[in-house]
Length: 99
Image (cartoon, rainbow, N blue to C red; front, side, top):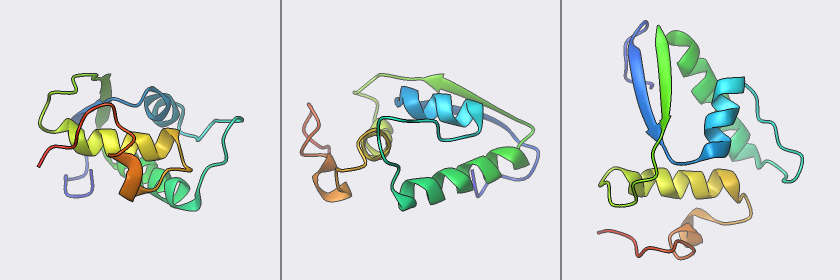
């Protein structure tokens, strides 16, 4: 959201249900997993950017064939499984990474 002007109407497609819940709640709410500092920092940035927008609608998207979803899969893997590294996140995916 950083490059968008203040007051924009935004539609976000995301495939991480936990992150959608956290963004809608405005807080990282998990008791079963420790949240890594880089996830907390990125989340705080997202909340600050969300606050600048007129509206932010988040739609759950599970289309693994969408060309824009590879990055969403990598980031959601990091958010839902903080013990994975960015380097091995794609290796843990059920689908091979796209070029």
